[in-house]
Image 1 (tube, rainbow, N blue to C red):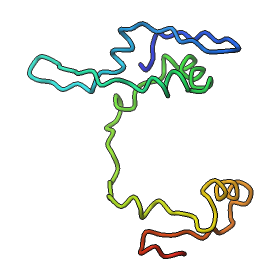
Image 2 (cartoon, helix red, strand yellow):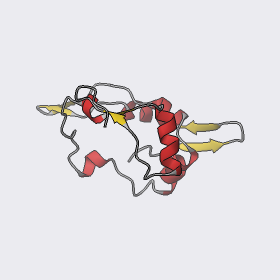
Image 3 (cartoon, one colour):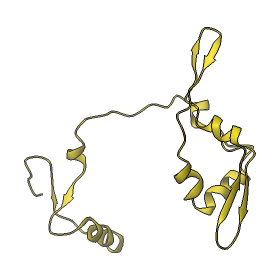
Length: 126
């Protein structure tokens, strides 16, 4: 179970998570690799900054209320990467004449407004 046994203390100025070192260590272990009868797992670390320090309060509310129901996705399904094309520049379009922030603001106000973009296909504007 993800983050089983943790406690959250909330104050107006900050939030504090109480969790024992052994549980934090286990969270950072790599997926198991079985060699005969001995299971070997190495410590890879965990994303503590995003998970525990910068996560919004709703994240911890969901974990607290669902602690008996939540499981790791990898425990119930095979998790793999999707297709890797190697052509990221084709999929990341650049707006022409506007910044990305301006385009995001425009999309929020008027989602159907067309935006001119530069594609990776020889830098053509479409």
